[in-house]
Length: 270
Image (tube, rainbow, N blue to C red):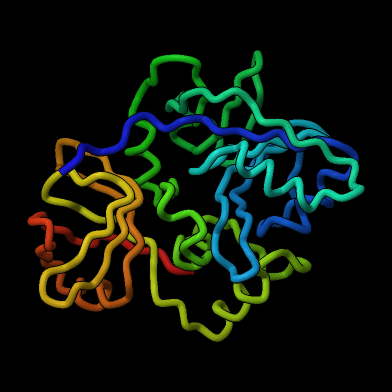
């Protein structure tokens, strides 16, 4: 199998202007207007069917200046798609140079700052920092432990908010006004019907992120979003069909058609 993923790229989009807050509040899933300067929140942009087109940290650096740190995808693509909805709003979208993401020192959860032009995003016992060159500690392992997914190309536009654990992240506001996909989000929340869930898995060997794994016997699918190796084996985040969750309650390792074994150790719904 292919090795686990390399260092994560830093894809960022700055949104600024007098109408930036209202523009984003009407497009994104989170309560944008409640975000204070020096803070960040998880947020997402959905399509009309409720599928996640982009997942990101939304950081407010000044009264009219915001930055989106994408958790997958490319900032240029997001800018092009969002620009279609700006119309006459006094908003400017600026793609920033791509860097590398690395783990920085401890910083209060949901705190953010831009020091000497470098963005810092507080995650509690560590921070996310945009570096120009070599990475530091393994950021990906820390994020997997927290259940914070990064979306590979094959997951973008494929899953709804509940399947990616956006409620667990606090990225979805059910009491705000309309935004793309809002009716689908509310329907799944209040009536149920979601068939997939974000899970932390243990694997017997390295498997490339964005691989769709199938269980021997019934073919139940496990879409691996990211994975890293460590002293205790390979751990990752995946989107699992409910058939996996039911059969995994006995905590046994399941044999996959690729020859590896997998076990779900934690899952997040809403």
